[in-house]
Structures are given as C-alpha cells and as structure tokens.
Image (cartoon, rainbow, N blue to C red):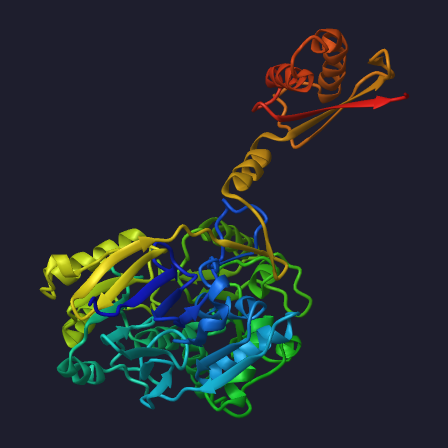
Length: 553
C-alpha cells in the first residue's frame, strides 16, 4: 500500500518577486503559508495589483484550516482580504501583521469573518495535522518568522524572508541555534528565501548604516528628508533616536508612514523618544539643521509623499535650496525610470540627493549567499527547494546548495509556481503542474483579463486607434451621410497635417464603399485599407475599428 503524501503547492513567489503563497495539503486539509500580492510591471496596463490564482482553492474552500503568516509585508499578507471574500478564514500571526490586516479589512467591503490566532516566537501551535514552531528571524520588518512545520511525513522548514544581522538593535538577533536543534531530529525539506541568491558575501548590518546616517546628520546644514519603507520600523526607530541624540526634530510625511508607526507605537514595538516628533506643517518653526522628515515614496510611487514634494505640490512641505534627500532603499526593478525622474525633480528644486549606489544608506532585508549557506548548513535538509525569487534566483540558490552545502543534486528541486511537490517517507518528487494565471485587481476588486487583453492594451498605447463610422440607408444600402473618422493617440510624422489626413480618410472610405459591399467581410476590408492609408502618415499602423450602421426600414 503506497504511503500518504504531503502535497506542497506554490501558488506564488516561485518564478517572480512577490505574491508569496504556499499550500501544504494533507488528505483534504489545506494550510496556507502566506498569501501576498504583487505590484505589476508595465505590461499590465491599468492594473493596480496582482494576486495568486485561487482556482485550486475555490472548490476546496471548506478545507482551508488556516493561513499562517511569516511577516506583514504586502507580498506576504496583501491577498488575504481578497481570499476572505470567498470564505471565512483562520489567520495565525503576530500582533503587527494582525494590525495591518485589520487596517486593510476596514477599507474593503464584502469580506467574510477572519478569526485571528496570536502567534508568539517559539510557542508551538497546531493547525489541523501540522504543528508550527515559530522561529524569529531578522528582516526589514518587525516580528518576522520562519517556521519549522511538523508534518505526518517529516519536518519541513519554511524560512520566510530572512537575513543574518549580528548587530541587530532590536535584540531579535537571528541565530541558527533553533535550526541546528531541529536538524538533530531530522529535516525532510527546506524551503528557503532566494531573493538575494545572486549576491556574494554577507549583508550589511543596520548598525553600519546608522553610522553612515550619523555622519550625514552631523554635517548637514539644511533640512534632511529620508525616504524609506514605512514598514521598516527598526530603521524608523533608529533614525528617531539618532535625531533625538543630535538635537533634531522629526516629522512624518505620507499616509502609510503615519499608519505603520502609529500601529507599532500602540503595540509597544516602536519606542519614540520624548519631545522629538513634530507636525510636518510646523517644520518651518525650527532651524533647518534641526529638521528631519521621514517620508514615504522611496520607489516614486504615484501620489506618495516624496513624489508630491519633488513636484512642488505637497500642501505641507516645500523643498528649498540646501535640503538633502536620502533614498534609504534599493531601486526595485521596474521602478528605475520613475525614481530617476523623481531624483531629477529633486535636483531641479536645488536639493541634494543620496541613494544606495553612491552612499551606504540602505541594507537589504534578504540574506546574501553567505547567510543562505549558513541556513543550509544549520538545517542539513534531505531535500531543498528554493523559494521567493525569479527563476535565476532560484537556480542560483540551488547551485549554491549543491556546490557549497553538499546536498545531492537529485535532492535539489528548482520549481516554479503551480508545480506540485509530494513529500513522503520515500522522498520528494514532482507531481502534476497546475496552470496558473495571475488574478488581476483594480480598485480592490478582481477583474477578468486574459493575457492577450494586455497585449492589446499595450498595443493601443503604442499605435493609437481610429474609429470610422459609416451610416447606410436601408434597403438600398447607400451612404446616408459622409463617413466620419476620428482618431486618438496617433503620432503623426513631422510636417503632416492631421486634419488633412482625416479628410483624406473620409474620401478613401467614400471611394471604397461600393467595392466593400462586394467583399465577404466588408468591415474587415475597410479596416485593412484604412490601416494602410494611415500608415503613410503616422508612426505605426493604428488599430482601426470601422462601424457600419443601418438606418431606415
């Protein structure tokens, strides 16, 4: 009789950065580790967010026993409220991600009940057939966890997102002791973060960049604006205390900066020195060299605080000569153009700008190769599957495990979203591959959209569109009025008069109308001829939509 198998099903995070979601399935019981969103690239024109494909879960909603959360970043929790529109959920998490989820739920309609279960580091809890041991790890957000999961066929380690910081200010130092203890009991499978698998060496410590900030703060004579992720509470706290010790005042700019710091402070995770925080609109009451602003917008997100400041449209803060702007984050791929545009605006306002590539003002929350190897050697798994990264990151991490951790090549499986894995007492094997499509979110609601649709939308943005309306009188079928041609988004060649081109298009349609009636598809005939006509005068053949409208009886 074949042994039972644990099915491990990645719905997101393997093959891309973000949208992390992993299913553990035993018999009919389903438990999710994380359920996050992804911010789309330019290929998804007009789309705000992407979520995992829940089609595998839809017929099994009653079997979902819980969602276990590693930490509170949107790419790990952002899709939970959308899943809660279909079913009640039990969510297991620490206080900070719980607070973030409650904020999100307050802004969404039609969600079903979410029952929260408090998770505390090293306090084992059960969800169905699984036992979870939450192990604290260092990351760029507070209360980050890895999990050792006791399953009926062996122990599995899910690293979450992690780094190793021996000088962590918070006291939550990520040590490998718990993993080494578990390795003595045997680890069947390790699932480990691969985001920085291409980067050799070891990440810097938060202590290192605090030293850099201290040097900058001591030399600066103008106001300082630091742009960073609001979720990086440790860095916010470090900057608050550094400013306090140097006699400076700090103002917050940006909705999420206020929300995240308020939540962390209320929960006791953020200690704010007394007589340090001031309102943004009151920064003018203090000497420039005593003012620090912590702002959102390090990725030049539309309508973020720093973008509005850079464009001179922020209601409460205006840049002036001598200000220093510090971008304390890396440039996330896909955001480079928007960020450099914002930096140019900042320089136009006569501010100076520091960013990671020219100054040591940011450290990653994801471990480099040395740290990934430290976890591999501490865990000593029988099988290894890299997670959280594009395929190149997963592959690089797999090679590291084979070459440096001496895990047999056949025991390292590099897979992408939808590839079902089955773990049994006999080992880990690939099972079926699910066909997954990203779920598209606009205005907090799912919308339908096939991949071809976005090719069409992108094509429209490149070529423009032409509408041609021809009104025919029935029953004779003659044109009742001259055709009408309108266009949108066309790039006309230099020296071309658009009005004359449109007049020429009308004449062409009148000339071709009789011939079109003899065609099998009159509208397609007119469409092709009109495309050829416009191509003589514009940069690209436009999308042409001819409409034949009959009037009369």
